[in-house]
Length: 555
Image (cartoon, rainbow, N blue to C red):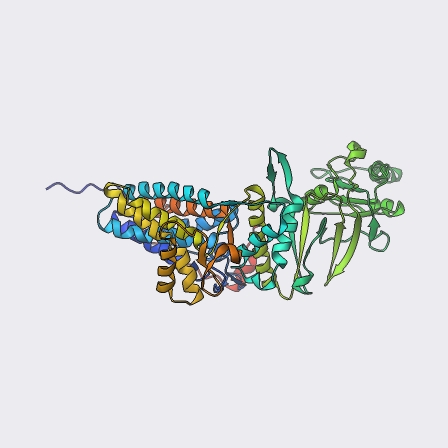
């Protein structure tokens, strides 16, 4: 008998075949089970303790999965799903995980019956195309300029979140912020960049009702010389610089040998003249406020305060960009290239206020701001963090509506309609693909089923009644009222979803399920080369003393 041939190293572990499929499906199901109770308005909150001992209390799918550390590779790719969903459309992070988990769960029985995973994937993709067609059919176009409609939509998207208790507050903030920074690209397209031009400033203290969207920007800085410079300027002329207003030090160490005492004075005078020159060039344009990202020396501060100009130094690049967008200024790199057109005159008021213990500078009442700051107030840091997460979701939803103004019914109605239509279609499909197609149709029902579970109603009765109403693909707007668990008309209840969010949820969930089903081999091994004869080293336990010596990497 021939000897077995060793191809892989002994340290490598290889698993293949159906065992892998089952392991992947189990891992994905356990991730979706974590999130299942956080779907819908009657959702539970999850409390997570992070490595630093901080607490995160949230029901936002992405925020929960971001904090969880998992070992299984399939579970990791499930977590990536919610991150993708969050970056693309900002909402539906929980639905996408729950749906993907269910699609894998229904595929498991087919794998046991020796179906090939490629057949299942092919069928799922066919189901996805048909589901998209149904979405297009039931979608309802809306008018973006009608504020009440948009407000209703954003509210129904936040209804599942913790801050829904505060009524219209968050929805109003989100719509104000996104309509402020929208830029027309022509041909009916609008660009809304939430990350760049909306800053959420969380200041503990006060009440949540004090939160507002500023018609301009605010940042956590005070003027350089508070006693000598004005802290309130009406209609300021603003100059933004990315240039140090102090004498430049040499790149490397410079040694200057001075023989005479007067030379020392000449050297100091040169430094003074250099700074004076820069200040004169800036003051030519009669600014009221000069902001620089770099340093500002005492001498420059003296010249500015003498001329009655307020100055702020060491501002963040991102904040500087927002100020430029808000007041119409241009960030200048060299003072000698300043022009009149670079001066920002769009702001109505510059003011420094003290909130809590910190000083904040406000540049507000701008004429046509293309950047804004949302000021959030609240009793505690944890609450503010949760409000910020909800606000991000709300802003993403209103951005989606501005980009693609279409609605689909919420409350599980869309999924039930898709499910009913796919079930009808499955009757026309011939051959082996019929059954996985029907299973995919049933998988869509997981969303309304989970909603019913979270409301605490009789799931079987509710689902049977709903399936009866949707049987012929009719009553597309009948779904579950997530608060009471009663069957209701989504149009009357104003429970809507953005078309973008739903389409993205379906696409991401089905494509991810297909990807995980296609995996039939996992090879894991030790990457690091170890000296022969040495086993794996014991994990070292870090003491408190070591923790202080570690270098903290910047975010």
